[in-house]
Structure formats: structure tokens, C-alpha cells
Image (cartoon, rainbow, N blue to C red):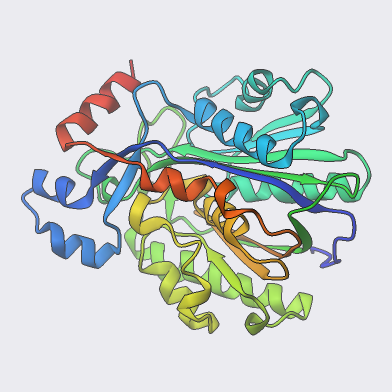
Amino acid sequence: MINYKQFTKVGVVGVGGYVPKYRLRVEEVAKSRGKDGKKIVGSLGVEQKAVGDKDEDTVSLGVEAGRRALKRAEVRANKLGAVLVGSESHPYAVKPTGSMVAEILGVGNEYITADLEFACKAGTTGMAMIAGMIEAGMIDLGLAIGADVAQSQPGDALEFTAAAGAAGVILGSKKYSWLAELNYFGSFNSDTPDFWRREGEKYPKHAGRFTGEPAYFKHVVEGTRRFLRKTKEKIREFDQVVLHMPNGKFPKRAGQRLGVEWEKMEKGFLVREMGNPYSSSAMLGLVKVVEEGERGEKILMTSYGSGAGSDSFSMKIKKKIDEKKTDLAGQLAQVEQISYAEYLKLMRERSL
């Protein structure tokens, strides 16, 4: 049982996101299969997805997000006491992504690191672990990263949305200036077989009948409701709400069930223009909301990971960022379209 105790010593010190420039339109994928692209776009609520270059993987994406978070925090990497990387596309089965990212960032040697896996919510679980270490006084500063170059087999339904991206969130003690104060954390989990990839398999499998109600909606909606009951917070109190975005339809429907107005979800709603970057989906939404939010706004974020579980956080913005210094919106605007043939070529080159 989780103790829903309010954090008193933890805040968000820096945030950073990285989205590769390449985009593959859903209609382009549909055309390769002889399908009606406009109908699929309407069904998924996604227009295009971000695609990593041939030399981009979870490590390089995580490094980019980490660098941006450090720059935003205005702290040196060697102050970090923890670097936790959540992903379902770690480049090695045995060799930590976390130590490689930390080495490139210049963290040094005295820090805690681990690779985390829980489908699309591993990065937010890293946030919770770092928050606990800071609250306990073990460390003063930690970096949680959610990063994925999402896998999808050519011809599979996942290929329309499986994207690439990374988000980094630096949490810190009161020794550092906070962009937002962390208030509460909660998690809701079960054994639900909606999505999996066994050791040695290249692509994941999914059970369609488990994907919606017993998986995503049960854990996001019921998990958020329980979180609000336990923390005695009300959904109407929040100014910005970020829910995991596997497609454009599920989070909107979940928001409606929770009683969230669309205006409160719109700012962090990135899936339509970049697809689902798995472990960084909800975290990238959080990055954008923190970068563009107003002082005093309350944020609710609920991530989701297949298998299945959700993590919920509540926080309050303490400092407004100068709009000239926002970063993620600019990345989302600077894109280069590629064809389906070019996409397949990048996938082949990346696997060499």
C-alpha cells in the first residue's frame, strides 16, 4: 500500500524534451498498404509520427533530453545524485543505458543509476523513485528520463503511431530553485496482458481486446480517480492535465470520463503531431506544460504502461518561463517529412 503523503522537500528544477526532426505521415503508411489514409487519421486522431535518424537510439535521445533539462535547471551534471532511464527500447539487454547517458552528460562516478522497464510508464516511475530519495535526504538532485525509439513491425497497427522521443525531468531539494513544487504521487497496477515483447523478439505483440477498457481506461481513469480520492484533491482544481497518449482518441475519452475540459488538456496534447513515443509520451506533455505554464497553475499527470499500470503526480508551477526560452514547441515546428520507403531504409540502417 502506498502512503499518500504530501511531498515537502521536492520540486521540479529542470525539464527538457527532444523530438527527432523526421516525420512520417499516417496517410503515407496507409498508402503503402492500400488503405484509406484519411479514415485511419480520423480513427486514430494522429496525423504523423516522429522518426529517429539511423544513428539515434534511446541513449542519444536520452542524452539530448538530459542536456536540455540541465540547461533549463542551470546546474552542472556532476551535481546529479541519480540518473534513472525508463525505456522499452534499451539498446542492450545487458549493459545499462543509465551509465552511458550519465557518462556522456559528465555526471562523474558518485551517483545512483538503473535502467527501468514498465512499457510506457518506466520514466515516470523513475521520477517517483528520485522524489523518494530526495525526500529521504539521500540525494539533492536527480534526473529521470523517459526515452524510446518505439518498435513496430512493418504492417502492424502499431506502425501508424509508434514514434521516437525523449523527456528529462530533474527533481531537486530546496537547495535548488523550483520551476514547480511536487505535491503527491500515486500508482495503480495489475497483471493485464495487453502488450508484450519476449526476450529475443524484435517487435512487440498486442492483444486488441485487452487494449482499451481493461488496460488503458481502467488504469488511467480508475487510477486517477483513486489518486484524487487519496490525496483529497478535486479534478476541477487542476489547470493543466496530461494523460498518456497512445493515440489521439484514448486520452480525450479518458479526460471526458474524469470530467476534464479539453482546454485543460490541449497544451500538453502532442500525439497528433508526433505519435506515441512510448516512455516519453506523458513526460513530454509535462515538459511542454511546464515550459508554457503560468505561475500558480496546478498540473495533474497520469502516465500509463502496458502490462499494466499508471503513475499519477500532482504539482504546482512556481515560476513562469520566458516564452523566448521555451524549447519543445520550436522542435515540434521544425520538421522534415520522409516517405515510407525512406522510413524503412532508416529502420534497416538502424538495425545494422
